[in-house]
Image 1 (cartoon, rainbow, N blue to C red):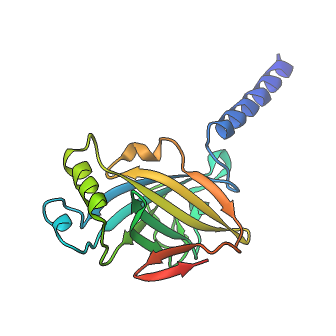
Image 2 (image 1 turned 30 degrees about the horizontal axis):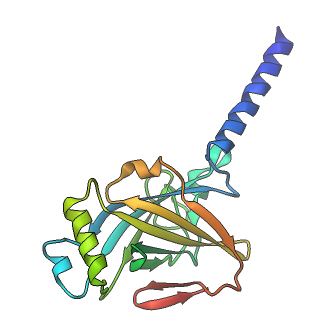
Image 3 (image 1 turned 90 degrees about the vertical axis):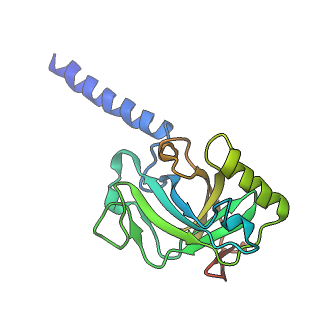
Length: 203
């Protein structure tokens, strides 16, 4: 009857909402982050890794999931955000977000594919310890799948900072649908330091 129809519809919406939240869909207030690496330059094992100094470049995609109530145009990396890429705890590349960048939107600048924001991180004159260089070469040459990198985002959040820690592989499109990044909220009194364009970014 009509009563059952209305009740069932309301119950269905509640279940969908709860499943979306528990399943990690995110909300506009607390989005879920995923990071993918579209391409890497400057880390060719046969040429680049033979040089003493490296100049890597990472084309990244940051997916910002806002769940049922979000809009692509509202999924943004705000001015002051930064990204850093490392391998086995050794920094390789970084970038500061120079302006508000939104996913798949004409608002702000640098909009990418729906739900994701493109970011390019670069390193200059990076010197790797011998053991790390050898491990990276082995992963790139002989690894069972692409080498895995650590990607960290630092995002302004209500007078504090969100530190978003992710694992990503080159060309791994599944990363954008896999397990989400870990998010930690820290106070601005902490002295966070990231490097971009050879200059330290301090928070």
